[in-house]
Length: 228
Image 1 (cartoon, rainbow, N blue to C red):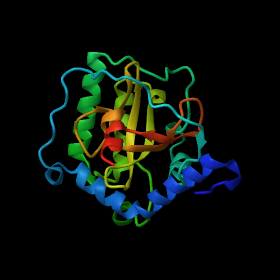
Image 2: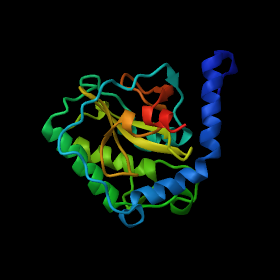
Image 3: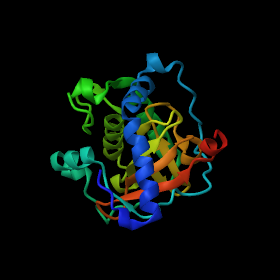
């Protein structure tokens, strides 16, 4: 990933976070492996039966460069990276939508066997659909978005997002923008949670207004702050 040192303190902060992500890349694949397989993950936690009350959106603080693997994925699957401005960028979190989010998250988590990219594809990082039943964390989230689009949810409101998890490792989640705030679909848990309850540090993710990604480097979930 390329950085421009002339961009000032934010660029330096972003570089620091990405250095953490690079150092944690091997651990991140292991976290994805343990989080996605129901046997390894242990007893799934029960999901709330009603939509959560979310106090705020996850707000960006500038543009960020996408990962190289994402750009390569876009070359192969351009429909995944295009923005349809006629679609809403947030969705009403109705009972029906909440049920769909929970069903898809749980189904994919229990269907796809997590395998590190190096073992699966023979490369360190690759984003793709897990069509063979195997995939890393980002592949699993891409499949969830595909299923949710097939159920009628707007792709523009569902954004791939890079975080640092509770172990300090790089991880990918699916962020769904709703009228009650952003909620997170994750292969490390079956429960769909408001972003504040995940314990993650939010680094960057897809924007909703174009192909550029946006920077979340200063957004730490309150539970992550409390744990430090």
